[in-house]
Amino acid sequence: MVLRASLVVAVVALVVALLIPAVQQAQEAASEMECRNNMRQIGLALQNLHDTYQRFPATEEDGHSWRVRILPYMLSDPFYGMYRFEEPWNSSWNRELERRRITAKNKIDVVVGDIDPDSPYSMAEFLWQCPSDREPKSPHTNYVMLVGPHAAGRKEEGISLADITDDPATTIIVAEIAAHDIEWLEPEDLDVETMSLQINDPHKPSISSHHVKGPHVVFCDGSVSQLGPDLPPGVLKAMITIDGGEKIIQDENAPGGYRLDLAAEPVLLKDS
Image (cartoon, rainbow, N blue to C red):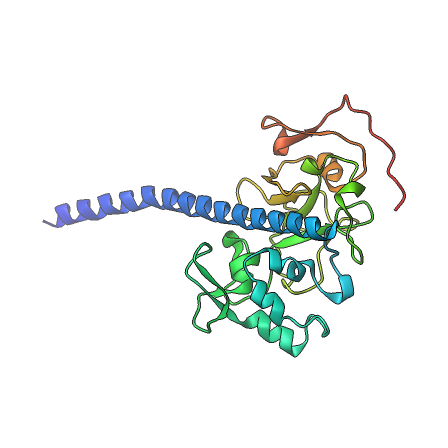
């Protein structure tokens, strides 16, 4: 009897050991898909805002984040109406909004803008955090714009698609980061002049994520892709600039999924 019980325990332990990796893989696949959908929603909102104003939002215009300015083009217009642009982004009123919960069963069936203290979602968790990196009740975000003199993100005045001479379909405007030091209301993003060009750099700010396949990015045409961790720094640098003249090709056989077209002749960067 003891032998049989031991055998049953051993079999159960073996089954559990075999199932755990499969469950973890399924969870990561679901998180990756949800993160990609978050980025698609951001990309669509940016395109809709651009259609309205003929430019992308600036990252620090009047001291407020682009993440707030695209809310009317997402699921949260009532929240946007409650936000006070006449006050600092971190005023007591805006901070209170940042901490509130919203009523949501899921991202399809949502009562937009309703405040519910018992909701499992904060605004950050609902829209601005990657599920693989979610911090319950945290205001931090995993989605940032790339900012710099030759990048798609600008601090004071947003650029238009007409300003982008490289292919918008391979020029990054928003990227995923794994760090937890930027709040979603905060007018702070990723500076391309100080960031690392190594994906998932553990020592410097970089485009990064906890996804095995690498971080997601939004391109200037609104499309979304995933950059492999082994993407060469030179290719990433070309994908960050809006006017470098490089031609970038998506290639599943290339490191990181993209490569430079060496036959294309680069042009000199324009002065900003």
